[in-house]
Image (tube, rainbow over the protein chains, first blue to last red):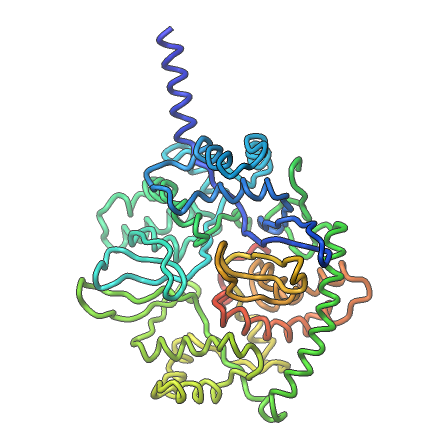
Length: 222
Length: 268
């Protein structure tokens, strides 16, 4: 019996550790008839445009996380569905499952092989400017718009913000950043080990996704 | 797709221009066709405001690169420089005066394309804003590869389009029933940074997927040819490039896009 309990506990822990990430660049509302309320929302993924109704778009939007949420709280299935219920999104669980099936939302667990697979399949692309560091806190770098910082991060995360989109996928970007860190003599394992770097990024990525400072796209194939 | 509708194959490496078409795409094409009428008027207005033909031959100035902000090496110390990423390089803006002139080279959103943003226009704007040494700083920015000069409608414009690419920033907010002919770009929950007509929105949405501006012009022209029956200008890459210059100024001046060198990754 205790074995069953352990299994249930392990499954619950696994589910809690699985984070949700939205895929695609928001293209916004599309009203195709003047003075009509008929509309869809569009999301571009690679060379495709996906059209979503209001509820689908709401759940996809919630997968970005919420800016006022503590970074220590994982943005997992339970957190998203709780937020969806508060926002009165009908049938949010079924919508979430269908968006996962359609690859507009992806689940992955930092620290596992699935995270590396996720990183190999996707690319991280910046949507804002780098605002650099400050003389008051030179170890922290921020991104945002001029006069409007939206997120602060370590030098390592800022490095990925600046360069990750130049590689065909996020895993290559982590490997490249780690190799550079080794080459210049950095000893911090967080900066020299691509696995640790990826885990640290994924655990804090919603801080960048929720204010639309970045988006995830499918990997490049060439 | 059980919950959504795609316009393409699902292969991220597929050519955006070859995506499948739907009824909604056709209506979008109609919207772009209406936009072209507006575009013709706008081109005409631009010619008038441009002044003399001689002025039209003077190159436009565009900033190059993704701004990465100041670098402070020590606590309490001044910024050593400001960083801009251009391809795999990071040329440095050595002081605030260079930052100011590079920022000015983006254009002024309020003026849109009403003023041709040439070297002379930038120097005049710098003088008005009490920014000294603009001419010398522009020379230095050109040497650093942080600005590029290009004359639309010339062979040099084609060379430029083959050497640079457009990278999009911000998110699309789309149109609204009250304003169906303009699409907004910005951030969720705040006033849009800019509203653009459908063909400019199309450039913002798609051009970054191609490895060069010229490839984007060819791809968008090809897509227009497939989608819009009887279209002319939109199916001509040279005409798309002309529109691209107008779109670039609007998008770059609102930080909704930046120019990068062409040797960076692409979907196509």
